[in-house]
Length: 637
Image (tube, rainbow, N blue to C red; front, side, top):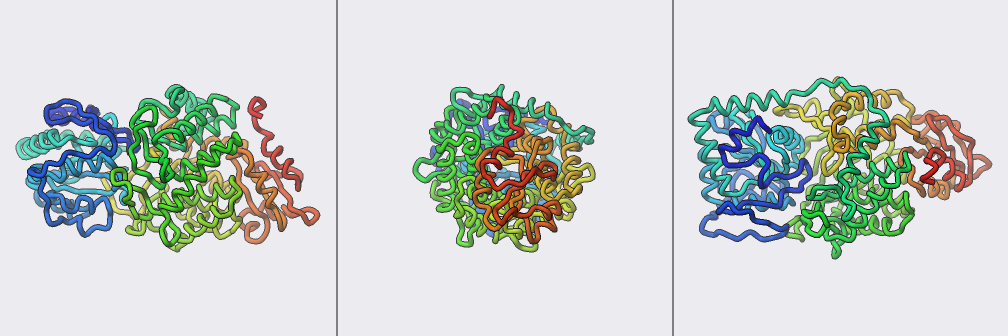
């Protein structure tokens, strides 16, 4: 943050002032500054006052040719926007102009505010076109670009978010970053930085050089964390917990379901009642609050206030998936019907309002225009919803959810993955989230095709994304070169790709018994240890993967022609650290230890195993539940 302070303050923009927002959360600051400098509260959904004399629309810029809904929203701005690409970067070099890079997404409220207030303004457009090359990026289509420059923002400001505005030298080196910028400050910024670049480019070049030095990756030297790291993660959440309203302070509050899922696992491991209390208090408060859409179902993205009364109204597919899983797991842990009912209501919304004709799922409903839908089909977010629906089929014993998940999965069982229906590029999250979905779908259906595809995708990810230390980059090894090759361990509104990768590796190690996955999981944890040691709660899903790796965990093998009652018993209780297989056929080739697991006496039979060593077989569902709860702490049972 100190690196850019001089330029930030000279431009009249505070690095941690109005407009700053929480990292990767989408929860943008709720304060802006008006022309007199007074603070103005902007509530979500509040319309901006129009200024027709100051706003002029062009007939269209380069963005009119793009497929992204977000870019099209800026296609009639008076700014000569470029999409991200070599054309824009070449223009900056040839014209010797700094680059104004703005990153957002189509359902982002504060992106709409800045677009209406500044990017549609003729005076802003004139300054931008005179002194800058302007590039607009949809973060959902280009998570690699977003991750790269979000890493820059974290060096230059206290609390970054979207819209993310980064200014670069003509050769692409960043020297300024801010989230939402009020128009008067943006005008001052453009004027001052444009003048500074022309008259004192060495000052900007010096700052850019320091930023680049700060982005150099640290060497990984950590050991594999132990159970004490799980305790530290729990303590950090407990210290921030809002005991009255649920969720974690300070606001704005995101659902962050993967954090609650970690707390459930900590409760399962230790029996700590407060861990479960934090989860239940939060889930109940969200369901009662305005963050829940009482008319259409589903959850809005986040709440501005501590009491969940002032939501930002975008409804994202990824949030619905993760929250459905959190409610399902809490239902398993407590057997309270209210949690199952909420999961069903989420699925009703998604299947009605976000399902495409081919069975895949659209990305979001808009924050400001409530009926507008972002119809991008993203592989990673669809992977999350496939995982959630498959889990719903298991926990709620409702095959219709598995059918919906299977129909969606069929859209992605192609030889080559794409990131979306609009872009052929592919990213780590596409691989890891889809693998998560396919592993869950195999357990819901026992259709070995899903398990085979999950393994194929995982093996490809090991060759395309892994670095020599064991961590995984966001971009593939044959992808476009960026400022740095982005790599994330910390979670945001969704778990980081590395966190999901750890969980997938542990699951596949338990399924196959192959040392390939065990070694990769241990290397990933070892190389990530330094990143997560200080604030492990920022990597909650990675900690859930650590919990699985440390064990105890189970391999459950079901054999026989009718295993329905045994399967219901397996998923009746909250036992997250397990894999479930159906013996026979191709499964023995994938999981050799299952070859000897056969039905006894012609009836359905369950084998409950740990480290592939199995207890005596049983056909009694009650005994299956007892075997799976053997390791549960006494005060929890």
